[in-house]
Length: 186
Image (tube, rainbow, N blue to C red; front, side, top):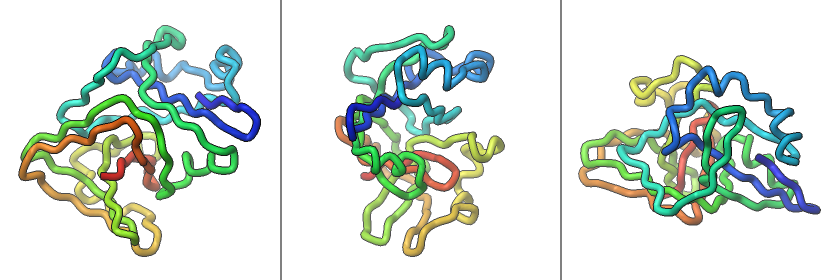
């Protein structure tokens, strides 16, 4: 949900993670305009369905939850930015910062999918999204790089982890690719 105070926008990220499997029948009937009106929000932006790639996602604190038309969600992230920075939420390969309350744990032997920026920053995919390509699944992620519209100097790669790794949170830098898959800077 997107709220506005003066020239500042607050983005409240809600997720079914830890609550339910986001049943399609409940997700498909949500109306963004009606929800925005009900919650006095500037806008409600749907960013899914999406699937997490970590072996375990830990939510270390008790988080507030809301029920939207029978679909239970909890608040996982909160970001504040200037109104002119909002395009980073919908512009591929443009990062944004959020306060995030989860830890993504990847087991040894797990295949991970990463982007590298021209500055040498590495971003690991934390979830893939079905909004752009409804046929996308975990098996196709290894070859996703050929279909991405990568900016000059960016690269996509996959590798298998030799040991367990955790992406801790609190303040995270994230971005989305041209398929709206989400990555976190590591």
